Each structure stands twice: as structure tokens, then as C-alpha cells.
Length: 92
Image (cartoon, rainbow, N blue to C red; front, top):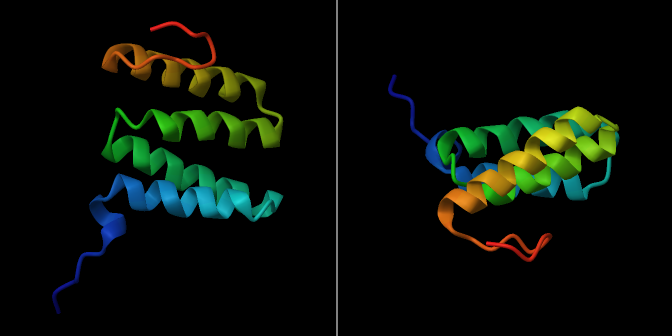
């Protein structure tokens, strides 16, 4: 039997949207699943800086300051690489 691929196999935006929806439910038990999907979005699209931004926020919910710093830094680095202005600092 042939497996039918779905959007979650290859679509970074689908993972991001699912992760964001899980996070918006504001339930601590769903945050690890949300994090898994944000990470998958970054695996599929390493330039997906929004996923890194919201990953930092998800880890903030969990109180993991090291991961907050890691993903905040990753987001800034992605934006810098892409030539996108970082609104937090006002710099390019």
C-alpha cells in the first residue's frame, strides 16, 4: 500500500501554523508538541525566522532562559543573513 503524502511532510508553513495554533490554546501540556512543530518548520526551511521567534516565546512560557536566548539569537542571525530589519533593535 502506498502512503499518501500530506502537507506536514514537506510544508514548513503548515508546521508553523499548527505549532502556533497549539501555542495559542495556552495550555502548558501542549507546548512540547508546539515546539516540535516549530522545530520541524525550521528543519524544512532554515530561513523561517518567524519559527525561531515564536520558539523563543514558547520556551519563555516554560521558563527555559537558555533556549529563549538560543532561538532569539537564531532569529536575529537568520534576519541578518536575509538582510531583513530586526524590529526589536531597529537595525539591519
